[in-house]
Length: 219
Ligand SMILES: Nc1ncnc2c1ncn2[C@@H]1O[C@H](COP(=O)(O)OP(=O)(O)OP(=O)(O)O)[C@@H](O)[C@H]1O
Ligand SMILES: [Mg+2]
Image (cartoon, rainbow, N blue to C red):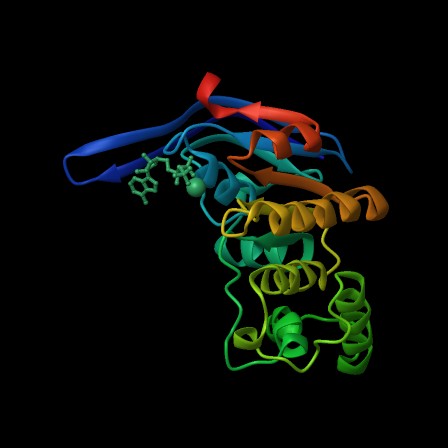
């Protein structure tokens, strides 16, 4: 499903070229899960941004579902992100003025949906029920707990029925127990829906539970 070969990512800054990822190989089967670990600054977020077609690599190939996303134009990358990927970040990035339901529907604003808005709403309500927020559809983010906000972000990541979920320290802003519940939810979705999951974490217990551990500190 994911096959990264000989990936280099450099950042050009005034005065120097920062080599962040060098000759990196990484692969993950369809429906499998991997935890990406490594010290701060080792390139975990950079790798996730490349996998998410948010950052074009300096060189190398990045195959996801048979397409080389390193070769995408910006338009192709945007379409791919919207169709195939779900993102969960350390901060939830919910829009404060929108309700939980409206936040989950925001990926629709990018357009290109085959189903009616009503059908999407019905699915959104189902997803919110699944993440334990069936009773909070009309709340705004300011009226939710930290774990509830992150669970809303998970439902939003699922609304486009992605084949791949990319999560960058999704439990990083939560206390241990709340974080575990969000991690369990992501792993449940991976197993039940056959979604491929890449999760960046500092939490080694979580990394063990995810299964495959990819350590950028040892590259
Ligand atoms: N746009 C950029 N321009 C220059 N350097 C960058 C840029 N983005 C990231 N870097 C550098 O690349 C390195 C890797 O950054 P990255 O955010 O991927 O690390 P990380 O492993 O996610 O760290 P953390 O655990 O702190 O989140 C860092 O040294 C960072 O300073
Ligand atoms: Mg990071």
